[in-house]
Image (cartoon, rainbow, N blue to C red; front, side, top):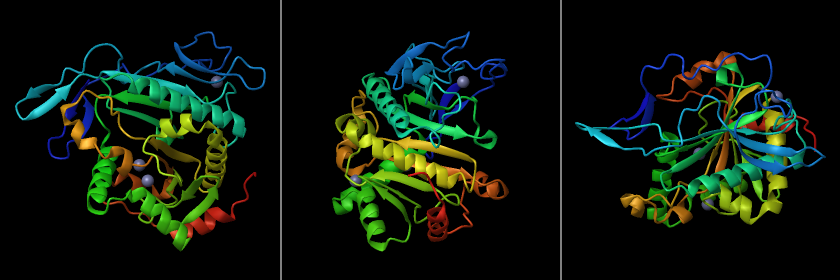
Length: 331
Ligand SMILES: [Zn+2]
Ligand SMILES: [Zn+2]
Ligand SMILES: [Zn+2]
């Protein structure tokens, strides 16, 4: 398996013939519960909150897509580019409790998980080989969920993932024209129109985007501008309780429509990266804005998710917001 770059869209893909390497064995126990007989390699622990040894923890993924040792050694193949799978691949255990999910855990637990995510991003961005750190959660069989335990995953990569690259280019272009952050402008207009805002809590809002890729797609954003999630979270940790509560309430609402979903945290790329094209990102702190995207998987509408050339989303965001708002959620 290796990384290859599509020269037209400039996006990297992992490809190659790989039979068994990434197929985890079925196990009779959960390797992420505290009393597991096969503890994974622990990277970082957050202190326990109700007498437990830890509240959230990062461990090395048992079958990692990326390997921490070595250099990316990017090389040409005629007009093509390829590199080896250097990076980090971690499992972020959201709670020591097997079934304390982001929609069922306490706000204090979710806060610790968000803090762990921020610390791992900050730590991995110190590694100059890595251009980007992604945090994502795939919940449900159709989403590609790997483990039963309440977990998210993290990857640090020597390239910027495609969707983020599109956002970065768009943010940079919008800023070049208007000298404003496109995300801040979206927030201002959505607050003014109040057609697609799901909930405002503290310094955060949840909204269904104007042009959703799937029905009930929801974004969670901070109303104050900040490009990097980790800088925001570690600079103002008292804010994370509100973010955790909004995330929990939003997932509670969405799960009344669809149990399965993808969740991804988008933060700015690594500005420590020793890249000659760094000038490309010189307005990054002003033109990008961290956010969380939640993409529910609605089974009979799954077609809309797999046909990605043009997204087809048969529920308008205005309708989606109205329905989600009616859901009774815990305060
Ligand atoms: Zn478990
Ligand atoms: Zn902004
Ligand atoms: Zn995004």
